[in-house]
Amino acid sequence: MRFTLRQLEIFAAVMATGQIRAAAERLYLSQAAVSQAMVELAEALALTLFRRDGRTLRPTRAAYRLAELSAGPRAALGALPAQLHGTAEAKLAGPVHIAASSTIARYLLPERLAALAAHHPDLRLSQSSGNTTQVAARVARGEADLGFIEGPADREDLRAAHWQTDRLVVIGAPGMPRQWPLADLHGARWVMREPGSGTRRVFEQRLALAGLAVPEAHLVLDDAGAQVRAVAAGAGLACVSRAASRSAVAAGDIVTVALGDLVFERPLWVIRATHDGTDALVDRLIDTLAGPISVAAQAPVSLRSTE
View 1 (cartoon, rainbow, N blue to C red):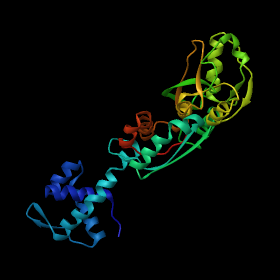
View 2 (cartoon, rainbow, N blue to C red):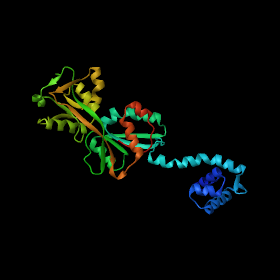
View 3 (spheres, rainbow, N blue to C red):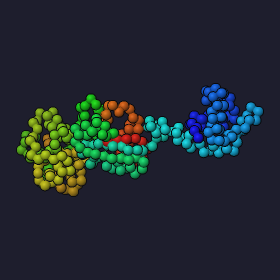
View 4 (cartoon, rainbow, N blue to C red):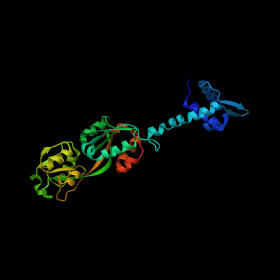
């Protein structure tokens, strides 16, 4: 038994109009093509679908039953373009791998991803983390659908767009001066991220713009949370995302320290591989993750992804 979606569409037009001629005009087909489609469909199903009454076709009971049973599958197949291209009717579904630099992965994305997963049960999200350089490489190789990074990608095989703005703060142990003189920048012991980290790059670039030499790293850690704990233990000063420091500052484990009037801010970027082309569903996912968590919990979407 073989029949096609096109035959079912023609059948639906004949049911709606009651005439071969009218159905042909509606579908911009010849009457012969419509008649042939109805003959082939009836033969494939081993059913009599219409009885002729003058110029009008009278549907049989089997035709009414076929119309009822085929309406859902025809609608579902007709919605496939919307599901694939991300129009408003598409829902968020399928595997998405997101790669994110460690601060974003740990402090900025989890609540948003949890909200998405809760409201879109057919969406299968996974996330990996690394520094900015590592995440960019994963996205370029196609190992992740999306990347969220703390520093510019600086690669021709990636497309980058602004996602959010992040404020960096300098932190110290309780008892540290709340104002640290720039002239004594090198007098402090510094707990820094590893080379390739977007946080470290922003810190060094801001000092350079102010005409200041970058201090030596006395302790290098590859995680913002580890920096916060090391500072709380008295290891020195560190520059971290405010999001990474917030709970420890509230608990009194660390304090924020001003470096003169320097302000450390950075754009956070969402990146995609240039060879992926345009994917409207990915665009909608990015828009959802860019909004407040309440928006992320409510917005419908669909696709693949990575940090």
